[in-house]
Length: 111
Image 1 (cartoon, helix red, strand yellow):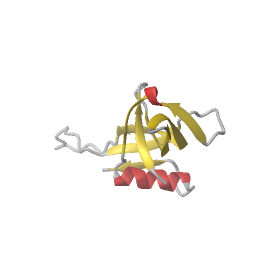
Image 2 (cartoon, rainbow, N blue to C red):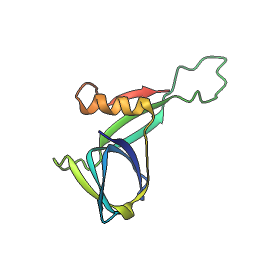
Image 3 (cartoon, rainbow, N blue to C red):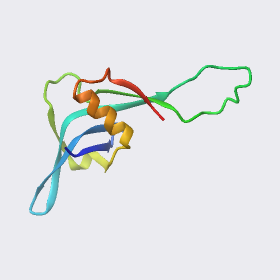
């Protein structure tokens, strides 16, 4: 597997097993296998009297199907829709792999 995160022109961050589709040394598109959108939200802790109000850097990470109304597990994406493709942080990749292997509830926290 080549797990990557693609930032799309739409602003979505999509994690998937991403493969380049090339011909004659030119990339013509990408194949996203089991694509999911990465959703982030602050992981709020408990408030205390001496809370500084500073963000501790924790976020809650969840995944949702990128195109929820299809049963297709492989989706072709045109080159001109990608801004960039990057390697995920180790924790994000582990959460994704657990989720696609059916070992997670699709919602976890990462530091």
